[in-house]
Image 1 (spheres, rainbow, N blue to C red):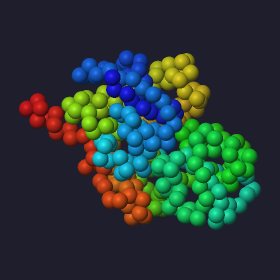
Image 2 (image 1 turned 180 degrees about the vertical axis):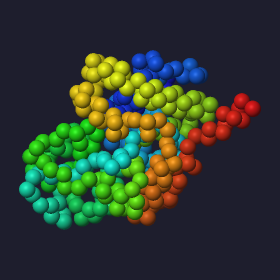
Image 3 (image 1 turned 60 degrees about the vertical axis):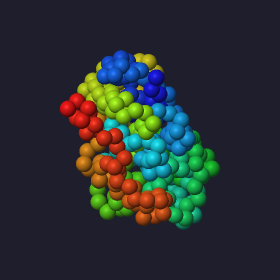
Image 4 (image 1 turned 30 degrees about the vertical axis):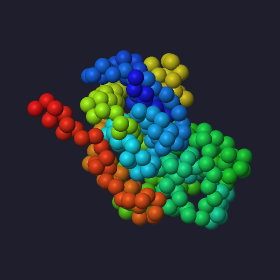
Length: 286
């Protein structure tokens, strides 16, 4: 049984559930189970090599590159949008403002730390961040996932993480947020079959979005209503999620270089060097 760990937010649920509903089969007849956990819990679990396949924040990947391969599918990028730094209306943030972030290894946390090196950071479950700002526990917070769609009118956006990303990257390229990893100890033929199955799941999901979305809503598998789900999937689970593009490869390498240049990673890596070698399939069937 292959355990696939993903977040409970709508895009990850959407991209996996074609497998859970039996719409997609493994070519090698491998069986899948799934578990939904918040993204920082998944990041920590991947550091501890807990799951066979796991969603992670892209910013974590250089820390787990030796034990996990980076998959080409199930990816979420921002393109003109992304997490939001919010604060209470009519307030001004001081240089040492206190901010709530969703986890040490999230991509938004990495970019935030580069943009606001003097801020005082506390880490919280992403579902608690909005309330922490509203009750004054922190001065600001970075909203992620579905939280960006519908937050209190007592709050306002101080800055878009997308804008921070473009400034740091020096160009407008997709903002890398989350992807999928696979344990390297899994035999290569089975690993490639897992990646192929997950890719088919995302493809089938996007091709049958109205049907799958309705099923997810009817079964109460997601936290948003049908209208919000459609909006959210248009942002983070779409044709760009099926397999990494050249622009997305560039964006990942840019993120990893930013981390290395700022002393976060011990070496600069290029994401294509850490993916499953698809050429194996050609050798195997030649």
